[in-house]
Image 1 (cartoon, helix red, strand yellow):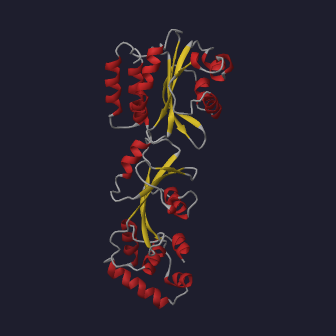
Image 2 (image 1 turned 135 degrees about the vertical axis):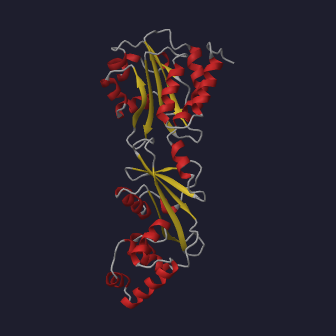
Image 3 (image 1 turned 180 degrees about the horizontal axis):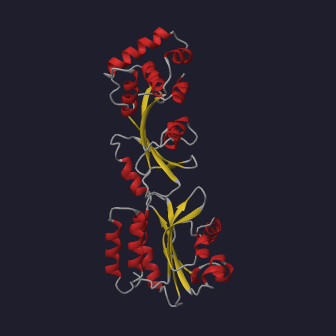
Length: 343
């Protein structure tokens, strides 16, 4: 076993304690950087989280750098440089002296760090246990004797704990637990793409570009932080029915490129509402008149009125307006774009 640096045991205990703290990743990152200074006497430190869509880093915490350096470190050019160094893979920490290229050929070092007086440094890739590239931690010193080889290698042992502490999915997974019977889910990004949600499978209705996600994004754009609705679905070799869709806006502590959690779950109690009545409830939620519904559904107005009468009884609602409010609150309606898909 490699030699451990002085105070390694105490530092490991502190890192483990910080990892277990509640709250946001930025707070834990700040605490971690304070503790790691005892291991590496850095003059500059950065903790980044990765935006995989833009292939850029977002700063979670930093100290000791000028703004032009920070701007470069957040850029896609810096991400490309990290790719060339292999820092986009789950690998041991790398000091400047370990890089496969001369430091003067690296733009980050030659154009930013060395002119600022830094003489050494170490980069630690941060990966989750399920293989997600979370980000990067860098510590730069003004003393070429640090980091030592022992400190570098010990950082590799601490990397899984540090990764867990700054994993942006921690708060999102905790949020998804609100829906206790969820059986599938994804994280929706602001660009309209989807990312896997740790602990839950995917679902055909939640694939990137699906109309379900368009409906979810539309509600978020209107300011909904929580919504639920039904979507018609026929499972393979199954009977056509419905799936409940729940949309939860990501907490403010999540990286800005993550928008919402979208979950599927069993429909639960439908209050005896039929498929047609669930579709009509979707039109009621949109404020449609009986005439417009009749034209849309190609049925007589009196048939629409009969459906609405049944809906009011089943939802114990004295008016169509209150029926729409209760349908929204209970998620007992099929949004208009999804009803069109079913037919």
